[in-house]
Length: 535
Image 1 (cartoon, rainbow, N blue to C red):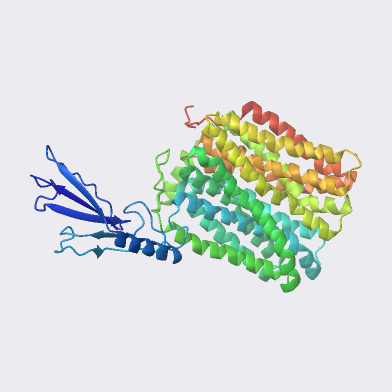
Image 2: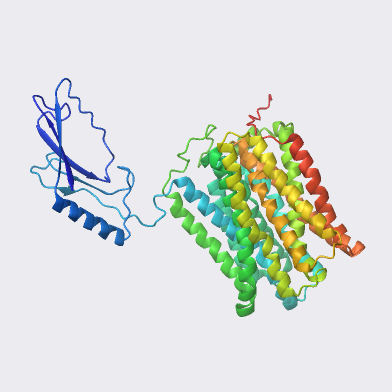
């Protein structure tokens, strides 16, 4: 152990007037670090460092012992614990014996992560559970229909009821996130949709109650995107924003893959009820764990925000009404950039929701794959999206950190997100005589590249207005939920009328992808806007 001796000759130290010598040895103090201003003022300070080989060997052995036991000492004084060994009378004790003031275990391993990383990680996990609860019914609907004697129309009604709640909750979710903070709205949303999911087995025999439970699932999941957007806007700096958005919303793709892989064996071995019990329980477990993450911070975020904090834990109904009136709705709809986001969100959702609903049937009927093969290849697009999402986010943040204009970066990413699936759908529509697996590969690649939208459209809400990001996403996502209600049903109607997958599934998506690209390039902007009513 090295010991540092500070000795002042001919004068005493300004902060230690009664001691000629003071000896301190510090290792990761659990106390707050104090700045020592040793003002010698025209006097000579002699510093002597003495190191004992034996002490040094003991310290190295102790360090190895700490590593073996999994202890982690923070290198910054006064933040996360450790101990301070001191001699002299500094602690009010006579003599020169060393003392241990405190010690703290470095467990769990994520304890010392910055708070924003913990919040982003748990939010992404919530989105994983979100899509697991979204896709479980698409698998369970088959045995449920057999048990209760539902025809296709009734089964379709049950599945579409989710989007009713999802569409209705977008704007309220954005407004509530603005008022109460995204983390509070997110945790309430997860709790609501998880409890509603667990109720499905009990309500399945009574159709109105079952539909109501799925509407509740849609409401809980509908407030989550706006809540996550608000959380990201408050805590994540611009140069990290693409990665944060991609990591959080990328949880949706991972959740789809996980749900589609877990649901069939669970249903086969334990019955269709098991997926609702298990997936709902995971959401409740997440809710409990999120309370522990929030313990490390005060309610309002400690990170600096770019707008005056308007959050209050206790607001009266009158104050909430005033807050709603204070939202500059007219200014939003006078902005060309906002209209570009609205239309682009609609176009992207049309392609996403129609393919999510109809691709398994397309693979089975048009490409003559059996049901097992069709189920497995349906996992391909969301699985590939996970890889593409990480690449796209790194690409976008790298360009921004190098000084490339943010608007240009968002336009590049969104253009890739639209032109890639459009091109692949055109190739799949034309009769080139390609074998089925090549068509599957082309479609999987195109839909995976559409994940570039997470570094394009989905970042723009925070770019133009961190203060109103959640409300803006609520607006665009409300319109974006319409294809889930209209587009999926229209695809089925066109398929019955034309018996052509190219016309019913691919042609409308290609149209919206192309026109969405034109509108985005012409009017989209990431330039910050105040949205004051006088603008």
